[in-house]
Length: 440
Image (tube, rainbow, N blue to C red; front, side, top):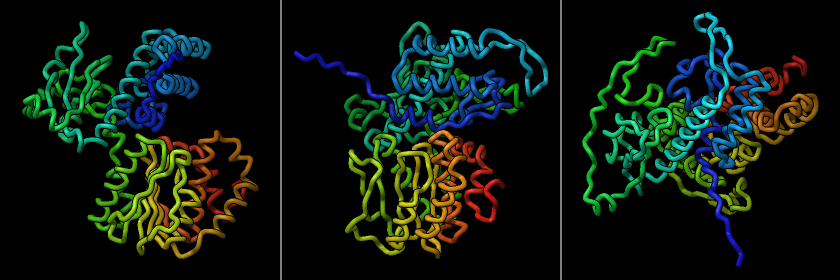
């Protein structure tokens, strides 16, 4: 008899959340309060890990642990020797970039690795869980707060235990767990049917009993719910998923009603993509009403064809991307081939890429760029890491097409993408502007 071993599937949404992060500026890496609340949802930081090689090594191991389901012991055993070899271990003297003082600090230790592992794993899983909660909120519209009964449970969190509020209640922006280091609280989604069968109703809004707390590093004063550790009084998943302000900037050409309608569509596309590993495309008419939706086949998750599909005049094409890179030549050709008005892509990391059709056709301009990039700039592009090279190449291509009058290029990049573009600003500028010399 064949024995079947079942392995847990990686938490896709949690992995996408972690991968979406940029890196905190080195001046924000000294103290854990230098990078606070919502900033943690957008950028990776480990206090005192000022050096780039150290912070990247720690992040890579956390991502590996999340992706492969590795344990704390495995994480510590693999990472500790590397950090010791890098000289980031034990206590050392370090200058505080805010105060200018030289102080003794704790660098790496087994206890610190435990805190780094636990905090980042819990936060990533919580953010990924929130993506699933938000995607399924119509079927499961309630959230049930559960405090795990264990000797180390926090008594301040007991007042939230067994309470139920709607998914869309603002309370979940303040007390969505984890609510502190090593917090074991969680939430369970509930249906209206379950509520009725159990005789449960939505609980009254709680008194958060907020207290004023001053961030000693910035001097800012925050109102923190009693019992919640400062910095944990936010919902990292909600911060990660909220693209409303970014969308308002890239879609300022649309009337408010159309802008809201298309944002609802791309939000749904992103949530769908986070749960599946394939693209989906929506075709909307000139009033931003969806008329068709196509999903890529499992064996070709990045390919969607519009063959024989009736496309309305001045259509808006909206689709999810498998990767964090911007629009492709194929996207722009789709826009022109079907006489569309715009094409938008939403990446798993929350980057929004949008192009409005211009007056020139794309084929010749794209060919010129490809020849240019594969000629005098080939070595510079090849020297980059593959992911970074693709991001630089495609972003420069869109800027080139905009300069040639093919499109109007609008985008809101995630922190990670923005930092890639900043690091390679000179190369992008040279690639996308033929008025500059290759070595400019």
